Image (cartoon, rainbow, N blue to C red; front, side, top):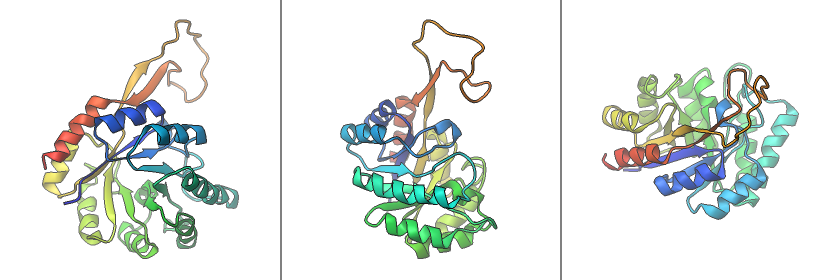
Amino acid sequence: MKKVLEVCVDSVESAVIAEEAGADRLEVCANLLIGGTTPGVSQFKQIRKKCHIPLHALIRPRFGDFLYTDAEFQMLEEDIRLFRELGADGVVAGCLRADGSLDHNRMERLRACADGLSLTLHRAFDVCKDPYQTLEDAVALGIDIILTSGQAQDCRKGKEILSKLIVQAGERTEILAGGGVNDEVIRQLAEEIHTFCFHMSGKKTLDSGMAYRKEGVNMGMPGLSEYSIFQTDGEEIRRAREALDAK
């Protein structure tokens, strides 16, 4: 039985915490609060030096949909080549057509760029039109992993579709359950739909070390404090690891 606990991280500190807490591999990204974007080069290099488990780099140039311009797609190809040179074990990417289908031609090109690396189709899968056909398309393209919540806000709500996808995929590709994962969800889904591959962030909020705090000036998303720092919670990852190992 294959068991995987993947943790997505957007800082060097979070990566080290996740590995020490029992993660099997890391998805390295930036800007987790907006679903993740491509990590910085220096960030990835530091994580590569400090961590000894597989690292998969998220390749996503911006927040929003997965219908990319030609310039954005060129960034995807170049970033895959770059992170392969930097020592990534895999990359995480996805492109859709305007009609909600998987962009076969572009994904084929990304598969070629990622030659020798694991390729994960990320949660673009969760906003595609037909998940069952998209799974077949992904298998035909040689995609190694599909990260999905079962086309729901979280994988608990999407467990019926997840269950069908796991059966359909068989041994052909790894179905990686993500979205709202914690130790309780792992126990539930392992029991109910027999899935043992999970993706989580396990974030907690830290208070900034700034003593002086300027009020009324916001650098980004309204309502989000500039003095809150999000970091992987080692205890939450350990509980998830224990829950998965117990199955």
